[in-house]
Image (cartoon, rainbow, N blue to C red; front, side, top):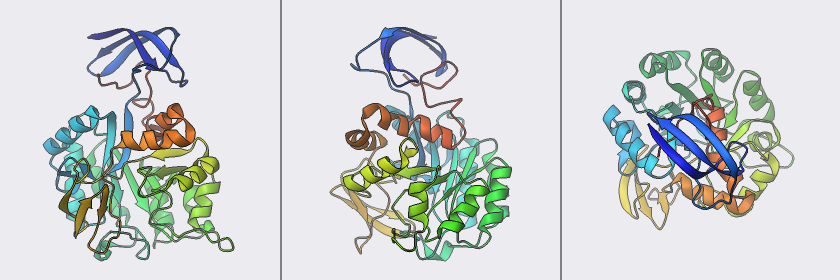
Length: 344
């Protein structure tokens, strides 16, 4: 058992305290606050990254369970205590291979799997491989569940995809989660999925139809409804003015993600992602045509960027409590409280 005595930490009310924290097997046994404190070298709750394709030379689509353990270790060194290895639109066998690795992985930080495709819009596929943009299929959820076992299963779905309403209802009824994204859906299509259990939007502003003042659409719905919105606050995918709009519209319903891929954490290099050659240079990952791919930043950098908009403590909430709530794991991780994960 570890005992942290007189340690400054950020409490679940987002005030700073000095107190004693007892931890065993990375789980908090007790937290005894003594007094409020100044935020000097404070212990923060572990971040939760619900959208990450890889980092530090590890590609989730090719990862074994031992690779995921290595990735988890590196992420914990940078403040991320829980994550969902994220699949791209690909063939079923490749998606199920990742689901199998997730199901086998015993590392506490591997909370589940996020499948970003294949049920997306061809028009807003982004960097995804168009060959694998398909109608919704309940059997993919069933197959993923059989491999991922008791881990979280989360799908990104375009509301206009064929069969999306039935798929969303089926996934959510059977313990999974649906986020809306890679989409040019109208407001009614988004509301239909929301009514069937979808609880978030995937990387707000990116790979979705832009706002038109007479047509509305997915972006207007995302900014005005009560669901959570993922946000890549890396300074590349979304600029500061758009971050400010997102915060003013969504208030407490933002979820910071890295959307990182294999090349994250490297200054430069050439990688394969979504079947394309991706070049990392000057803090960006792009294909040969300059189209943005995934991010090369770490989640902690996104927190600092967002802090300039909303304040540091709120930005921490967007990277810890909120993502944990989106995937139904706030009882396990996302704040410094008894019974939750904490890696020190």
